[in-house]
Image (cartoon, rainbow, N blue to C red; front, side):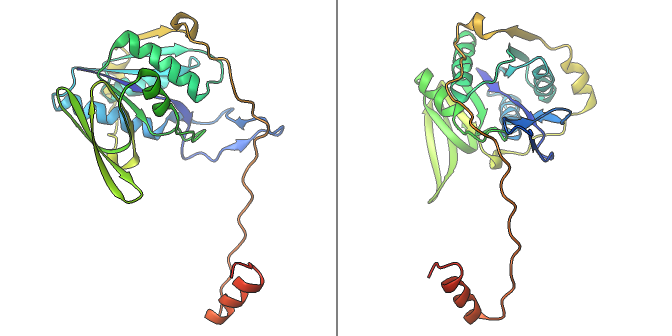
Length: 249
């Protein structure tokens, strides 16, 4: 059984992002980049399933510029068997990403497609759902537990009312939530070994996918600074402020 895991190169979650002076985008010049944390969880889950004897091969795939190879090498060091890099310098929207992943999936024919539930740069939370729709495959989003069988996969996911368990026929698309697992620390020998693992390359044109943007970004701006809180003497003062200042009661 084969798993295809999508990984994205994003600004490291410890970095405070800055908006460009012209308000056109986020400034990523000379900024530390790393694998999207939710994608890292997806890779870890695939590796655990392989270690449990449920998977025979893990293929990592990333879309973007040449530096995405670093992200793929990280996935290979974590335990992926080989990688596919769809190389493009164009900015990719979620629909374009889903179409490219669909094209790769049609070539690889995986039984399990694992993605992070969202990327921390755009927070779109759309790609997994779009990919499942394009493949006409069952989907399980925000997975906090995954149990893989021969013909179906069972996932547990958090919902507003508690937890929900789904049984999905394979092939299926699953997006990983934060509580699915804790990714392992990659050791130096694994990093060195990852350099020898196969990393194939292709392009959107070779895959026959149109990645032309469909959205127009008008402006990017930083959120307004939060105002300082106020300590109140008693409940009466709280009620007075809610009534006369906030005007919510």
